[in-house]
Image (cartoon, rainbow, N blue to C red; front, top):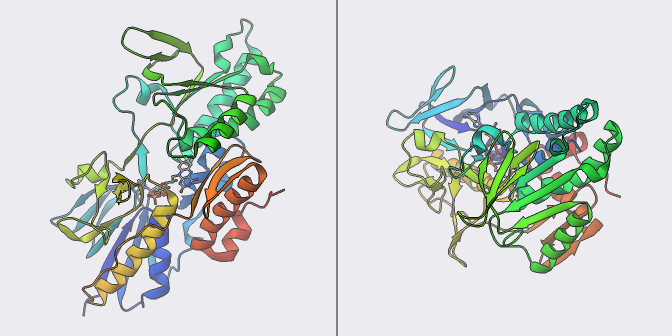
Length: 405
Ligand code: FAD
């Protein structure tokens, strides 16, 4: 009998979790497993704010995919998926095509700019290793240029962060550590640097406990961050941003760097492939399959699942992507073994920790609130756990965070 072919697109948290769980359970004669990813490496998306600020080298946030997959069981293809032809059960890659019996789409998120003029062209987003490297280099270039120019342009040293959600706040925390270093390195007066966080919503970190949010804001303000809450970015230009509280009241903030950290959408391949989605995210069935496509699973940031308790979608997180990867692998095993009953995915939210730089954080875990070094310790444990879940103790030893005290 012909072996069934499982193709996994994306080797992020969801895709790698699916692949590593399948390789533990599926026999070589049971199914062919193919993993496609645009790079030879996996990166820890949840650490990208550190690489972007320059507090962690970009090589620390990535590792070779082949070190965690069993190449006797999983074929790895380095290529970019362009489109899925669902009728033909085929994926079009940049350098060829691949057919499948079962497909897992785990391509992660993209930045969503909500049509705000100039953001795509002039703002940076923290999305992958390349963008993180570019942000770090750009900020450093602004400091180096400021030091060497005869007529100093102070706005070079203004960094605007659009969005006071998780990514924005974690990045601001890293900047709080990095900017004093940059000032020393480039002989720049710290008072000349401005870091402004612009948020359209009336609050910072929506969904977090108000006491913890207060702690985070106070901590970041102490490090020099200025918050402009309830203020929308109307446009991004080569000179900075234009903000406003309404059409009438507009203000220009000149800045050498603008980071957009306020919107995530699913991968655009989804829409290109004609799969029904809301901003690239597909409302999947409880077993994580796509309605009307019984052989396609969508997990991670490309999927949308509803938290029934509040009747709102769960925010896209690595925690959920990894748990979905486990369920998806078990459901694939059932399908190739001709079992019809599939598992329902239920997120098990263990807590959330938001870092505020190297040695501070806020969080809630196991029903308890935490701040300061305790929360920061917990954050590092969460990061190490993600490594452990995919690559076991050897990956933790190679890439783990041990600068705990
Ligand atoms: P990803 O892990 O992003 O992986 C997608 C993979 O697909 C990548 O390897 C990419 O290279 C590959 N790929 C993309 N397009 C293609 C293509 N066309 N062809 C081939 N390969 C492709 N979540 C938390 O739970 N906790 C946190 O503390 C946290 N912090 C965060 C901090 C930052 C700065 C950011 C940006 C996100 C954070 N998140 C956090 C969210 C979390 O990172 C995402 O929800 C998670 O990465 C989603 O996992 P995924 O498997 O869907 O995609």
